[in-house]
Length: 117
Image (tube, helix red, strand yellow):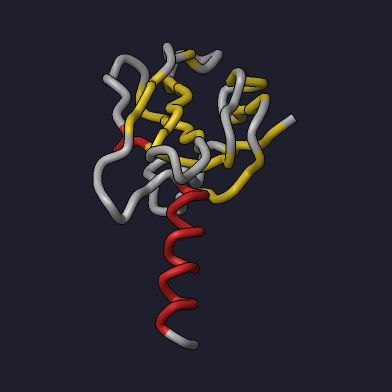
C-alpha cells in the first residue's frame, strides 16, 4: 500500500473514533445516568477534533459514583448521540450516532452491552 493511502486511512480512522493525529480533541461530557441496580454510571462524551473532522460520541462507563473521564470509554459512535438510557442493569441504548466500535479492553465490556436505536 502506498504511503499516501496509509496516511489517508489513518486520518479517516481518527475521524471516526474521535482521536486526532494533530493534537488534543475537545470533550463535552454530558451528565451521567446510573444503571437501575445502582452499580454503574454511564455518560455521553461528544468529541470534537476540529473543523476537518466530524463529531464522535464516546460512551463512558465506570462504577457508580466515580468521576467519568475519556479513559472510561467503552464504545464509539460516529456523529452526535442525543441520549443514553439503561434498559436493564447491564444494557445501554444510545439514541443517535452510528455504532463504530466497542473497546473490548474496557473492564466492563464483558458485563455491559451497548447498542443503538
